[in-house]
Amino acid sequence: MVQHGPRCRQCRRETMKLFLKGDKCFGAHCPVDKRKYPPGQHGQRPRKLGEYGLQLREKQKIKRIYRVCETQFRNYYEEAVRRSGVTGEILLTLLETRLDNMVYRMGFAESRNQARQLVSHRHFLVNGRPVNIASYGLRPGDVVEVREKSRNLPLIIEAVSGGRRRPEWVEVDAQGMRGQLKQIPTRTQIDTPVEEQLVVEFYSR
Image (cartoon, rainbow, N blue to C red; front, side):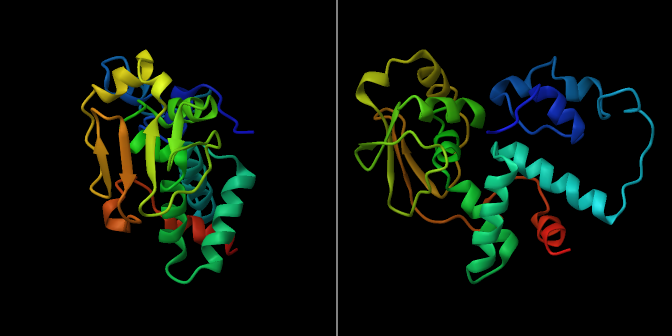
């Protein structure tokens, strides 16, 4: 089970916006903009992290961005190690091609957390079949679409009409409420502000 906790507090812990509340993070009342220091009694004290601390914080940051638990994250890392290529980059592409993340990237949800909930309630089809597993991995050519009976759902309509920029590696028909994964994204195409190599170093200790 993913350990959520107060989402704004998680962003403050990483001292950056993780966009866990979607478009709400751009509002004027975002706690990260108001308090640019970690939460807690000693949050404002300057802290210098060592090598291990930096690696741990980066791991936690990526887990929180993609909304996965420790066991899932470790499994993704081990899968990335087994594949040929740069481990850190493969790890990110595995996370990016999760169904819940693809729903978010295609603009059918305002946040990854919302996308996860919509997927679990069977509001989406993958290649014409209902899928309610948020971690379902997509392949190039796979088509994601909103189920016919879910197309009037206010949450989805609001997200689609929000006009958020979509990455170049997906193709979306907003009016038809469907999208396709055109290709596995390269690291330069993934705009997630993380240093995945620190995670590789963390698990390689």
